[in-house]
Length: 626
Image (cartoon, rainbow, N blue to C red; front, side):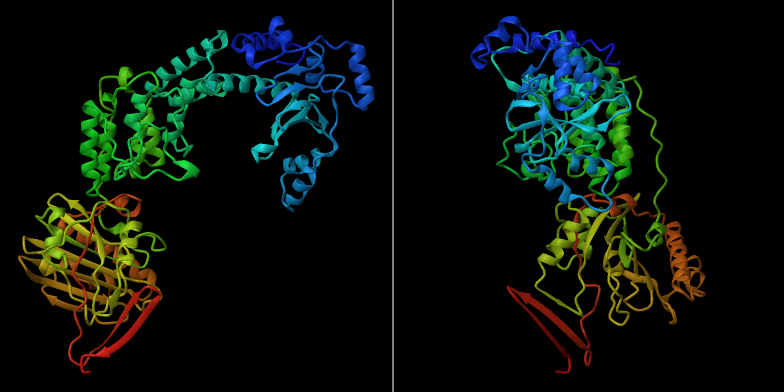
């Protein structure tokens, strides 16, 4: 729509009447505006417009001129401009407050064209604000569109933000009309803010709710954009949930449009936070942008049962099955009311939140659910097992970057691993934490370490049907002279497999160790080191013969290729797999500290001990001879 066809009179009259209906006379002293239900003034004649242009030495842009022909000025332009200039009050700003100097100092050599325009705008702009709450409205005669429109900048000093740009005066006025609606919708005044505009926008939000529940979330998001820009509470709540699931925002309070029932279900108090007031809209992100601690998400009905099952799977590393459990049950999810569009609280769940990848977030929104479920569960293909070879792939970052080690135990539940591998009989699993938190706990609680004590904090979970794992993602250098495999101790109930790979470039030549035990006794083992003979014990099966993998490993690339093949052979021989996603993302898993993988020094061997306390670090070394 061009300025020739845009209905300024209809637009301004609608704005005025909606304002008059919502206005409290005690809060607005202009009796004339209330009586006439008109925020504007008399139209400016052609002669007044021409005289103003001659005074200012310019021709007004089309939309401002068209506005003046309907009203020579305007009251209440949004929430912070009480009076907008007509022909008599428009004047050149000339950077009276010195903002231009600040923005020019901020310019760099690679500044964008719009930044250069904004920096120079202050000294040449036409000022339109006459009375305001420290808010400037400026039109830039050099920021001009192809159809001759001048850009309008609105700058509120108290906002501590760059000025907001609008493509034209008309765009500015339309935005201020929307701002008027937003303020009235959220103002909580005595008068209910309902009119033809709000009813039409709320009808759009209702249809968008049904679109979203049908899985057509992109169409729903597009439809909700306009009601949201007018501050319609329900649209804010629905669009906020979609954007939260998509990861497009980290600050979501739900708004007035979200019911208390939805808030209580989707935003439960953080775990262990007894003082949290769940009645207050604390949001997904708390005050000052701090992310809320993880929660324990629950939901009613069959979907809630599936969530509980998925949480149990996720805490043992079976994240793929956990996600399939959630998404398969999603059609049975029911919105609590019309302000509820998705189980967005899953994102903050301590165990299920980390599963929400970019693609899975979209998958969740695309499933028809609630009243629009199609009666059948979505088709989710079961993923192939991860195997073990991924540990040797891409050695530049993540687990395996410099080394890793793990124990696989057959016939034992993960909860029983501390009893087999722990440093004492009282060892138990910690609560699920991320790998970073586990490393922090390991370092923060340590007051002494030595060359003969190596007790890693390992993540545990299920490796395959009938197998459990204990995994250390940052294993150090193997001391081949003092290394003691935990395989025998772990195999008291059946078979156990230990793998340790060390290939940090600053820790000497790569080393790869495998040991297998059964019923408390080691059956066979080998340790292969680059540029060294393979050390073997027992009868190594032909499928695991280290010569198949490392005999010709003359350089690092060949060694890593051999390591990959060795891991493939181990996975095939025992039918085991380690969950790649659970061990490479921020998933929370149970951890515990194992017994030492390094034996104490023998007679004549040297050792060192490093201890630390408040503000002090001590180092000593010795020998069992002294």
